[in-house]
Length: 455
Image (cartoon, rainbow, N blue to C red; front, top):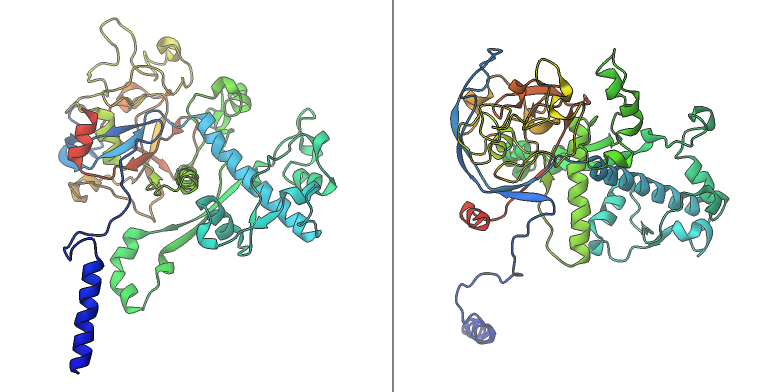
């Protein structure tokens, strides 16, 4: 027994002598970290504000009584997500599906080891699964091949005259509508195939049942949901929303034509906006992995309180993002894109939407927090939610309630709906020609450092 104690003491002495911390509690040494502002976003320093309607409630909903709430610091997109940005998402999904289909065809025909034709677009050795980027992990989780990964280093070919072989052509043709459905002979993508698959963990619900998870009565997987979301926006909303109006040019050109690249995307459901946030996180962390940097935390839709706090731009009890109480400045110019003067849409220089960075930003450098398009937020609509939600970082998101809050008003709304405190809602699976969205990301650090960074 004495020998065992002696050996233990000797070992402790050796370990202690070899330690650089001299036996003190110094903590685990990790990589140095500095907050990095995401591209195209503004830092919104956390703080308290008076949330709710401080003036007229013309429809007498009584759904937004004033209350003081506090939100933590976060980053927010300076503009609404644009057509160009959303097209990046759509094309990424399309190309991911194409690469998978090409690889599967090459595998089926025994062409995976060839370095020409469809073989160039097939699988490559995946190596250690732990070394995969989030993009590669996404492909494995989605399509389930644990031995190979898709060759994504070769650009896809879309010109029919340059297809490398017949197998490649067969896969590509399968992504387009059949010729009898083409319009004026124009080859058209079958956008119903553009589906983004992802999984999401309901952390809040899992936390409620954490005791059951610890005891083994439930599993973490019980709170994971698989999603399969068609990502292509519904361009028919320009016609369906206004039955007796001629909006065919907007249906045909608004999403794809470069003339509208910097305009806010519309025709996107709440579910598609959530899928976009998941993709943006995967896409960014793929780059982080490549550069051997820490992953960023997820992009998401703002809560209703975060949206209103950001829209106010630090102005307490103001009617509009610019202060108010009027929608014109002292020179008689309109300050947002909406429906002024009893329906004279063009009075504010726009009939439909305008560029996402049009008009002056608020004091947090956020554009069009009033007007242009209404914006999805993460919260569910409940007329009584202000009475029972928390006073710090309040958020009510009921999974079984399809009504999701939209904020900010749009190009087709009167000024009342542009007020920062006005609440409205739409169903999560509905797309409209006047609803878009913007994303946020949590700030990692204290509100004090966030306030210092903005001063």
